[in-house]
Length: 108
Image 1 (tube, one colour):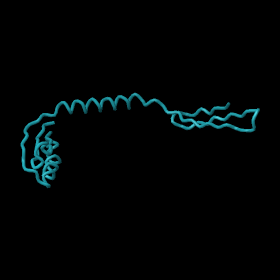
Image 2 (cartoon, rainbow, N blue to C red):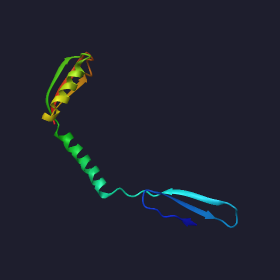
Image 3 (cartoon, helix red, strand yellow):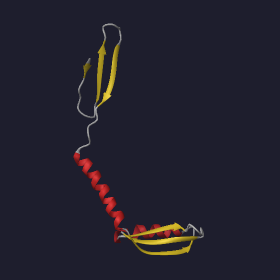
Image 4 (cartoon, rainbow, N blue to C red):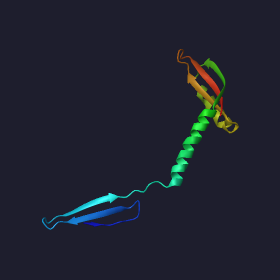
């Protein structure tokens, strides 16, 4: 059997010729390297940062308001405008009364 060794990430080809049969058997394989340590470390650091950020979120205020179809536009505008001030706004329907919305202000 002949195996062609190529650098990581490339396709290799192996061929076997048997004397007992007139066939040539080919096999294609792919060698994939381990991810470099720097990539693994960056992934771990990003996961840790996400966990830290989730634990830093603080609820500043919550209020129930009458639901309106355009209410999400105000929340979106506030989030886009004030995210650099570490503020985040949330809007959810009240579980018990679908005519009410819960508006929440967070500090991140």
